[in-house]
Amino acid sequence: MSMVFIALILPITLLFSLPQITNGQDNGDNGSSDSTGSSESESESESASESESVSIQSQLDLINYCRENSCPNIFILDRNLQRAYKPLSCYDVLLELKPGFRAQYNIQDLARALAERVRVLHVIDTQNYKAITVANSPNNPPFNLNIFDVSYNIPCPEYILPTHTTSEAAFLSTVSDVANTDGVYLVDYVEFPTYKALVVRLSNPNHPILQDNRFVTTQIETQSSAGHIAQVEWDQIVPDSVKRTVPVNVSESEGQETDTSSISPAGRQPVNADIAILDTGVSLTHPDLNVYRNVSFVDGVTSGDDDQGHGSHVAGIAAAEDNTVGVLGVAPGARIWAIKICDKFGECKISDEIKGLEYATQHADEIDVLNVSIENPNSPALNKAIKEAVNAGITVVVAAGNNASNAATSSPANSPDVLSVSAIGDSDGQCGSEGPDMENSGKSVADDSFAFFSNYGPDVKLAAPGVNVFSTYNGSNYALDSGTSMAAPHVAGAAALYKAQFPDATPAEVISALTSSGSLPDALCEGGPRGYFTGDVDGVNEPLLLREFRPS
Image (tube, rainbow, N blue to C red; front, side, top):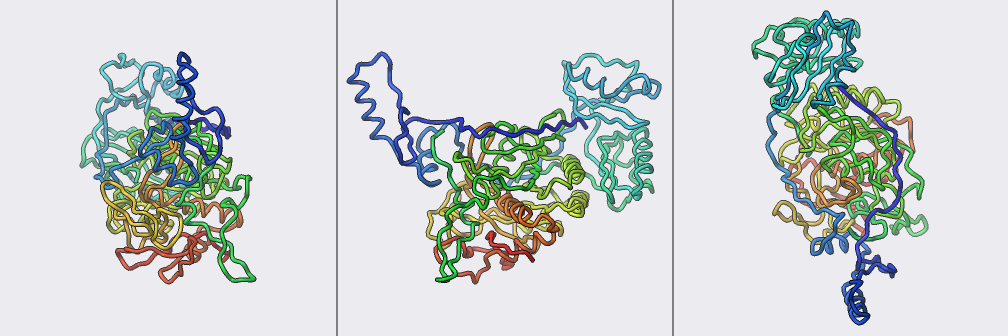
């Protein structure tokens, strides 16, 4: 698997503006006029500009304006939140370096040379097996058959074969043996401390390798489908969804709640924590995102840059910077690790997700929190990889899923080791259900109510805002989006805040702190964020995120 990571600290310059929109103050020379017009026309234009000026002082002001007018850098999305899983696409060519040429040629050099003419997908480089997969195309040049064994259109599905051994030497020996077995095509392999597995495709669905006693045959998975991802000028806006998670100050003398003076607990200082975003990538050029590392496990993509938008939106909810522009995240300025495992269509192979988890686990000494806003069919293999990350010390936060069903059917939401998050609608950043209704996918969501699309059930440990959430997007843009994908990073940001305060806290301690501090149905609403929601469909009553945690 080809992968690249780049250390990158982004500038904090605001890259967009639009005439005639103000933040309640005079913006100076924001108007435009026809240079060939008369001074009278210019005066009329200026008057018109002034008469059309609106005040942008809140998220609602901004979104209402952009629903009616052109805002080049703001997107109001209406995704199909409830959709079927798509079948895997298998249309590639396998080039296996013949044994007699393994000492003569470096497979990585061959892959780089091929990449100048074709799209290279995977590179497998073990001691006794070396291969390259490339995208099939009628424009591909002839391959050098003298050094490669060439196989076209290897059939789907993918099989995940967990091994009995935890010995690295024995495992790598198995990898080479299997890769050199007729009718078996090695896609990838993963090595966790206590979980090791191969990912293969087969010429015959009844291939003997599926009964090989080197593998835990009762745990072999067949994966036939992929999971999926569940401009104006304004002063920095605190999204309503973020406001809803912020505990208000308590006056000890009066015993009453008062407004917070600042959403950011660290002022202008970035939160000292690392959040990995396992997703479509994260925009590497966004002025509101502090991307520290990026890596890709998507076929043919070498950068963790976001080409879809979902991962950038998730990252901003968790950690958009406190820099006076754009929006503010829950853990402002936390270091973001962009781990790209979903393609530009938002489709995410489980084997790629496992590779991303392997990478995160290898960097568990740096990564504090991992956000997975992806829903998949039930996958014990994926959940085993999740467990490895948790055992390494990473707090894993995941979306419950958007199928309006029990989260027990979706991985990793059904993993007992994660913080699975359902979604509510919140339109004003406070309790009381007095905010306006929100429209999503042609349906109305009332303020402070359970989202119609959200999964539920005993596996869900927290709820958070997930309807019409305002956050960062591709490039230097911003967007309004919905889903349990948006609910999860509110919790991931809260987990990062906790880890910044208590760096030695274990994942279990972080989960306990966040769930014990959340609002429950008996929480009294006194005008701030503390209070519950209506419409809970299963009676489980998971706590609603409120960042008022204490060390356990």
